[in-house]
Image 1 (cartoon, helix red, strand yellow):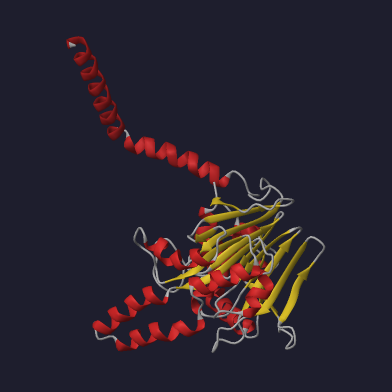
Image 2: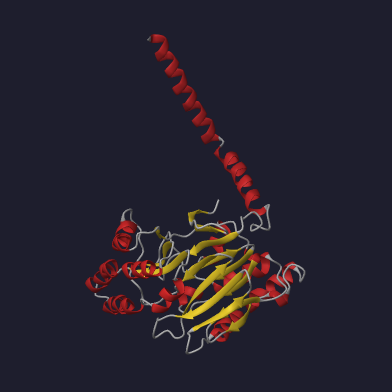
Length: 361
């Protein structure tokens, strides 16, 4: 018994000494770990090459205009085969793409749903990172509804001085002036169908369709098909028959969601604080967004394989709030349902019916 006690005491002493050495050497240890992590991030320029064939969907922004540590402004990255597209560019888009180990220089095109600030306030940085990281020699194609030219011109004006600095500093071989910014690919939707194919190839199709987000007009959602897999992005909208139509049989429906009950707490907080103007804004936004329950009704009627909520309103900073946010929806839609966070990653392999949910490694 005495020998066992000495043995345990020796182990404790060893652990304490090891911890002391680790604390003393914490600087060099941290530097070594940082070096390995940086090497893993910078060693591979083509992060798409290792992805299996299919449709891959990442949330580079799952939030709304509200401050949320887990959800920045709306942004969805879609990898179809080995081609990368981004849908909306909210704040944090570029940083989240980097955290997901994706090279912004590989973005083929950007698609915008509408021009509310939270969907475009990361656009300038996203275009700049795509330019620099890919030494792009052509501006980024940006697809969006009418009004797009004005938006892009504003960002071009704001970033023009920065462009001259970077080209002057790094040289035209690294920062070619012609690759700076974005080029508008403006579209309008037919009044009869309310939908239009923006890209149509045998293995890849991207369709824009009109949604209801008035007084924001036009506002659109997107349906993306790669081979035998499909995704629908609702964009910001009230409950929409168009979203249900486009989502019929889709593998994944990514739908914006707002909880009136939870937002009511925010409205009351502003009202109690005497900030009646902010309380009114909280009430105003109810009529042009979709509740989790309404989105679940769409998913059920469209028979989608999985439903993911994004553009989460309000923020959900505490454990248990996500469960409450989705509780009513889970009673309606019985399939896989997920409340999105930044960095979430969904894999829809070609030739499979599965929807894999996880994080980028």
